[in-house]
Image (cartoon, rainbow, N blue to C red; front, side, top):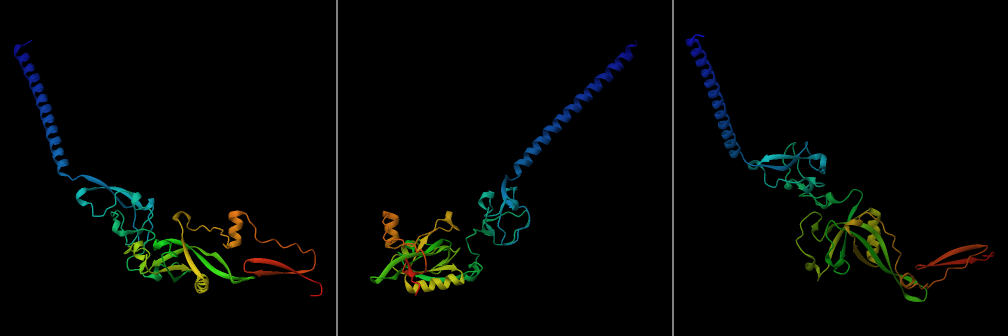
Amino acid sequence: MNRRLVMGILAVALGSAAAMLAQRYLAEQRRIIEEQERQKLMASQPTAIEVVTAARDLPEGTVLDASHLQITAVPEQFIQPYAVRSPNDVMGKTTVAPIAKDEQILSTKLRRPEEAPVGSTLSSVTPKGKRAVTISVDTMTGVGGFVRPGDVVDILWTLKLPEAGQPEGQAVTLTVFQDVPVLAVGGEMVGRAANAGPGDRESREYTVTLALTPQETSFLLFAREQGRLQLSLRPKAEEGQAVKVVPANINTLLEMQLGIKTTQQPAAVKSGRQVEVYKGLKRDVVALSESE
């Protein structure tokens, strides 16, 4: 083979190899430069933090559940004050202003269900079909001053009923109303921050405003004039549950606590007419003769 041809082929091969090496070197250098630029860009970007945002438009008064919420990663510099980080912190709360889709959920735009909207009046927080009625209580009848707006109470009535052989009558205590919402205590309305603790009520009377139906309101006012009212605070876990309570007097107390029956059941009347006669809480059956 011609020596000059061999040298030409070898030169071309070496040139191609050099070109490939140069191209590979340049590609590697370009990759290194791009990685450095990417790292610089990432370093210049703020840290993304997950916050709770609205999954859709939420009008005022919306009670939040899982379908209303979503988690969105937001650059730290764009996170708004009071932004909520966990859906569990807002579940069941109510919006006090409209919230747009994808807008960050702010704790200042929410309220708890038992809280009243800012600027609301007593009439606006009184449930439909109820009436607000106020009674006076003290430390003893008001559960030591621990009843707060938003609580639920039972109302007990103690009075004296006429009883044969007892000129002053027999004392009896009845549970007249159960599961009654407390709208206000003094000037503190439901949903408003407390200005005074229980200790501030130890030496004076104060008022409690309750939500009752119109008929219950009239019964309460009658009971207030005829005897003594007492509040009994219900636990939150028992709200809405009616409990059967036997009227308390000396007879029921002895029977339930000691098993002593102070009254006898009337004998059965075999024939003829009969009349039921009530003396206080005591029931008698009087048989009438045929001539009567």
